[in-house]
Amino acid sequence: MEKRNAKLIINQSGGNASSGAKTFRVTIPNSWVDEMNINIDSRDIELKFDGENIVISKKQSIEEFINKRKGNRITKIELFNFNDLCTTIIADYTNKEIAFENQSDNYLYCAFGKNNNPTWSDYLSFLERRCISKDRDRLRDYLEVIGVDSFEPLEIIKKTSGRMAEDNQWIKVTEYEN
Image 1 (cartoon, one colour):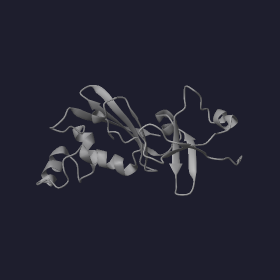
Image 2 (cartoon, one colour):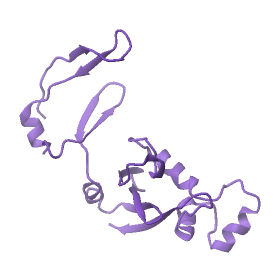
Image 3 (cartoon, rainbow, N blue to C red):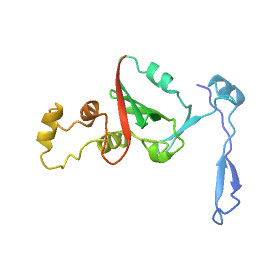
Image 4 (cartoon, rainbow, N blue to C red):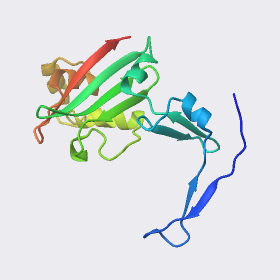
């Protein structure tokens, strides 16, 4: 692993930023950027912070995310509004990680709204919102009618396509044998 020392570039924020606001930048060596295959056409990155360290990674495409998880339990969720694909989610149930792409510019139709960094918990909440309430009266009867043994949101969505009476969204579920 190559290591270099650098200084943070600190600028005063302009425009309507609060007084004393600053922006912080760092310069990354060209050779590192080239090795990461980041260029003008593919420059999306992910930043991870653990309280002490910042890790910069190239953002993986959905295909790269799937290919790096051979042998894991992978589920593809496609959220539609009418017949328009709004969001594609790849869920790695082995590592409890997700990758997603919004195909719609209208955040109201996207699985995570304006949240660009959803967690596994956000994914599970999304699935639960596309199901009947787990507190609903006579839930057992409903689950029996659709052929599901217990309140498992993904299993319910497989049976109901995640359709809700109050909107026109629905979900297609694809299980991967990786």
